[in-house]
Length: 412
Ligand code: PEP
Ligand code: CO
Image (tube, rainbow, N blue to C red; front, side):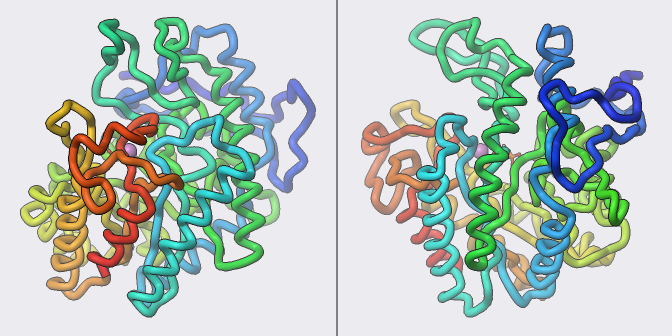
């Protein structure tokens, strides 16, 4: 059986470039060796000369979030679970390391605010704002290689892993990129935190995909003894890494953060209940967000059985709709896109299914750009041909802010 290697000896690790100064213990927790299936979508880089140093730097780096912030987020999410608020989780498919400046972050947060205000005005309840921001630097990809100008290259997998540059060398996974990603996440999380103090501002979230990064950022708060994933406020597990006996589920089951899990159209109700039992064993409102991403065609068959089974099992989950990831298609011109009408249809079906079962539709999880991009068709992007003008995403096609506003109007 494959065994995940230990993170080195328990106890303090000498910081190569100075110690972290936060309130957390910088010692690496002596984690249990995970004996489940080999985790999917991990870069194979452990024999790279930079690997050990990168892990040590992360293991001794300051926590990016505090136990108090995470507790606050759980409290406001409990309101969402109870139907007194809704959640808007939105941002880039994958963040660019070059867009982690104060100016870029201000632009992203302004769009999140604008959409959340619209949602609040239309629903009449407070909107909890969570960015796909401050750590969304790695992607699970369906293919190992992609074609670029007649050349086959390893797929771009996010700036935490490799580069977008179209050369074989630039596409090799480089563990030092985890350190670059951490430094960028620290800047962005700081900027997001300044906003949170000023208003009802957002929390950070990203897919906890790269275990070398995430496991190195587990911290124990010495005051409370709480174990946190200190890389973000709300980590999520993707549809491709949610195996109940897998390392991603084990990691998020072990931390006090609120956690989310994506659920696709092939999930069986029993599997989802099993995930709920692992991730929310105490049935606490505000702990677990289930993100339905089923596609407009898949949702009406797949979701009702899951709602019934989870409700029967007594887990007070937040039901969130990601109407993007099940609706990715190729346009007539071969470009990867999403049609706003499909996205809106899935979001509406999500609400109808929940309300038909007496449950609260907890909100939306969207890929939205801060700029007026042309990556999805509908609204301000008239047709497939219009996609070419401002298609700048590094991975999946995002809504532009006007399209996202239209979606929110259709959803509410
Ligand atoms: C994503 O949210 O970017 C993603 C990869 O989603 P999923 O795991 O639902 O495919
Ligand atoms: Co995506």
